[in-house]
Image (cartoon, rainbow, N blue to C red):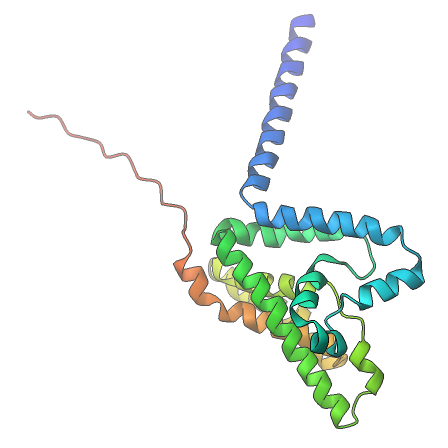
Length: 231
């Protein structure tokens, strides 16, 4: 019995070590994703140590609203991507692992970052531009120029959409329909500038098809060729 227990313990230890190594390898294959996630963890902890009033003002200064974009566009476009407006960090850890890490592994860090940054920046500018037009025509209050708008959801939506091209048919079309439903329904029912930003991010992600074609894909395994003997 002692030998059996020792064997089982050794097997469990090897399985645990293999699992830990697999997690390490997965994280190393997507360094940008997990560096970003680590920064979000630090900023989220910092937010929980701020008073609600101070935290709101703090985020407003890093928000990509019309006022801040007109004053410090580059600063707020960068800083807004490292703060979460309420909520916990753990759900983002799951979403980043499922979507961002997968996209970075498939596309490579540079192309993944191009998709995420492009969706974040372009969707922000388009949605805030539409909001500015709404304010100009009286369809939105003037106070909307200082609306709080931080977070990572635009970049995530763009990456989620780009992953469509890596899913084999016919599941690809089912996935695309789900993505369009998830991000399109709020645009129809809510019609807020953030709903527009999310759906715009999806369209930007789908427009990144050329990046998926030029991405380095894993080389197919070569089949062993059986050599015939010379008679």
